Length: 481
Image (cartoon, rainbow, N blue to C red):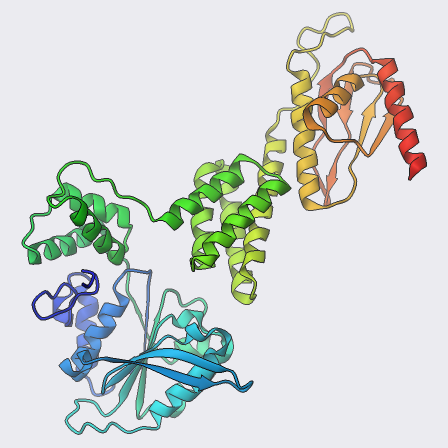
């Protein structure tokens, strides 16, 4: 049993086989038809988002070039030997007129595939005298994931064997391809279909199945797919199996990995701590072990985080996602860069929370130089110190130093630290400052060169005994060190 998205039999041609059968981007189909009929067919680079129809258009272009013979496919497994004597296995789909490969499956050894396989094909003449074209075509999938060495090898091959070989590249983006590759190809952008175009395709498939698809259902499926035609057809087939008539409200379930990514994003926003980083790392390992691409993980989690944070942080979240995506592609250990992005976002979120706290001035019910304590003051102190300490501990293992003025609520601060934070101050410096008898400030906390801010709190009578105990305890700790 084959999926609708892949089915292309003579009786049920759900997947178009010719350029005339394509339902959208008619101008692009006309252009490809003209190229196929011309005597000078160039190297092509198809690029666009996933599910836009790049591979379908490539197969239709091949049929326009060589006829129906390109549909007689066979799958071979080729073995290559790297310079270090390591054997590399790769699956090859081929016909008498073309060959389709995905060199990125070989990882860092994709250069070996490019050099040996494509060179072997390029040095072979077309043996079918009845063929419309005298050259063979090599289709390279996921061309934007090729290493720089593989792209350099491909560049030389494209120049040297132009008479016997044409190369068609399929990529999601051109940004990761070197300029010499792009300059030797005719770039063809396949844009994602609109909602109306996707509805047209869904209705065409439903008509082939002799099934009436409600317009509301097709619209909901198309909107959920967000321009991904493959996803829309898969969702349509799933819903058809669950409800044959698709009547009533549709319950389109998200993939398990996407739901899992959303849970990770929620964990990042809910709490920012080293313990939470370890929890998120374990979930990243779970996704990677199930072969979810790390770039997809990062993009999905970042999109979810952007939905949960304030407007001021959205640009920073996406900026650092792009930054660590680049590092992820350059490195080998993907988990390091995923975790680094999480820590960076947690730090940004904490700093934003600290900066968004209001500066607390003197108490509103201050009279005759005396003030009374607001009910929520201790909680404010505790919350502020918790934010500062958490950010500082996330960024560095250095000790925290907080300076308090002795004419204010030292007792309240110490109690809040002991009761709410369970964090021991490594150094308490009591300053004798009489110029502001009714104000206390948490000293500037320098975090990697960034000053958090002064936070002013209302005054309170000093608990002398508690202050003396704290000072004595600190002196004892210093003596032990």
